[in-house]
Picture 1 (cartoon, one colour):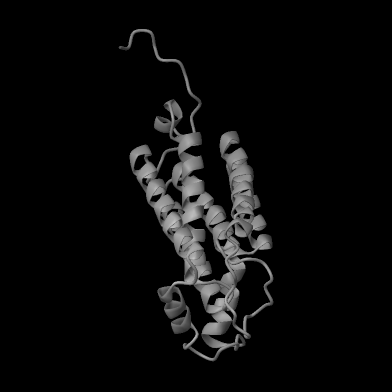
Picture 2 (cartoon, one colour):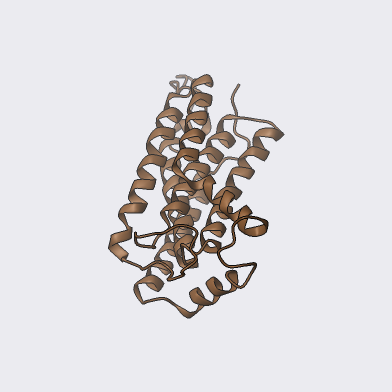
Length: 232
């Protein structure tokens, strides 16, 4: 029988969503008010580490590869793999979740950029030319919605230490992507924090509405059945 390992229960889940919304709002206020001093301070600290613009070895090489974990081709492979897994487990609701939630989440995050019109860092040694707005980080938000989707579905539908370890590892990936975006000079810290917060709020809200309501919340992986007439 399919069981939950460490589910995101409703009350705790909604508290996390509320916290993520508050964090996103705080970052949005910072972005709207102009580039805050702490934003520049953290950004500058990153760019006093190593050799600016050198991504051939060392930390720069590592960051260049970590950022690929949030790129579209990788996200598609991850989502497709999860889709197949949910199909094997015969979870049609989860299959729809895998297709719809990350796709719409990444799209909404990118649509928010012109709303805030926050400029990119003005470094001459960014690892790639960027011409879009900076806030929120679409790369970080996209990585968060994909990898967090993997984490919550693995936690819900699989048991065992390997599944638990894989789910936890998936939670770390968006943090690494966010770190890489700042190191590579393409985003401010406010951008990536907002991207993380957006992704958490988007995925958990979707998860709670789809899986943590009614009998589906108490019996994951099993079809809802009618209550026996003799029970109170």
